[in-house]
Length: 408
Image 1 (cartoon, helix red, strand yellow):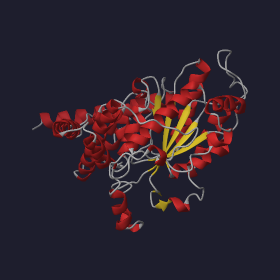
Image 2 (cartoon, rainbow, N blue to C red):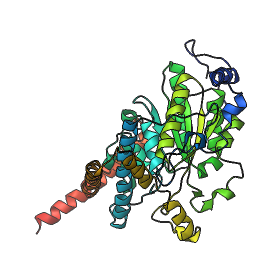
Image 3 (cartoon, helix red, strand yellow):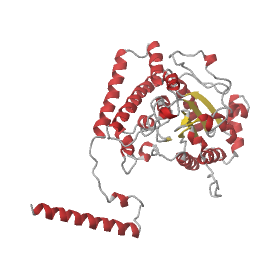
Image 4 (tube, one colour):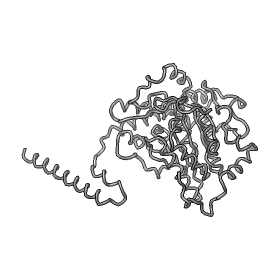
């Protein structure tokens, strides 16, 4: 990647070399830069698959990698979003089968990652999702029907990215990481305290854009969190055929940034790790890479046959690690969730599902002129000519229809 000499920070932003800034950021932890950048020896996990809080000494933490358990209010809010996310995933899969959506890449089983990604950010922060992160976009506050507009096959992404500080979900792998780094770079040049969360999957780490985004972020010491949802498959390609690194989080050290591994089905640990990552990025510690180990329970999309490349026994093994059941048990055992609370959450989830059914069943008015209206801020002569030709053809068709009706 070529970096223009014009990309220099103003006087309000430190021009200290990234390696020196990283060293200063690490001093408060009392560990070496290498120990800071390398992920903890064991992945961070706070609640086991049975919903029990793991003793602090067995959570995978070590000096410089300590994580307090999030507060009860934050955990209850996260659980509510987990239930909504699961219901949305299942509802959308049904809508695809009914022909009301063109395609849907389900995140069933990955809802903990989705919810934590959105809840860790402040209002002014940005999130750049992948095509599988619809639940994260919803949790960020975007209207559910607007989120699903892109999967209905409409010409636009459904919502205003600037209003919600959420990039449009994109199908090309990894391009959103470059956009995320660009936003973070602009925010730093302006002296803003914006943090950017860039989401991707394990398959994206094999793309060149992944390298370019991480390298640029590290060199310019940008406040970006690269959040890798390692769901073990890039469509049909297993992780073992993508990388033989000890973990994807270990890739961080090669760029000069900190990496961490976390149980991607443990929303408690995810919130703890991502909350801390956002705090560190906002304080000027530079970019971070967080790898969440999770699993895609359903097919890649409705067009995929996952039985061709994975065994039912593997899926069953991960079903026992379900993030929604795990969190429900944890909250219930602690007395934070009772039957009434569960009923209220389920009722809200059903209301969201009903909203999707109603919204995605409405006929969308089609205006062919939209093909030309939003290509450029100012239409080119060629676009004006093409638009006029189409308008003339539509007018002639309408006139012929009117004449036919009048002759009846």
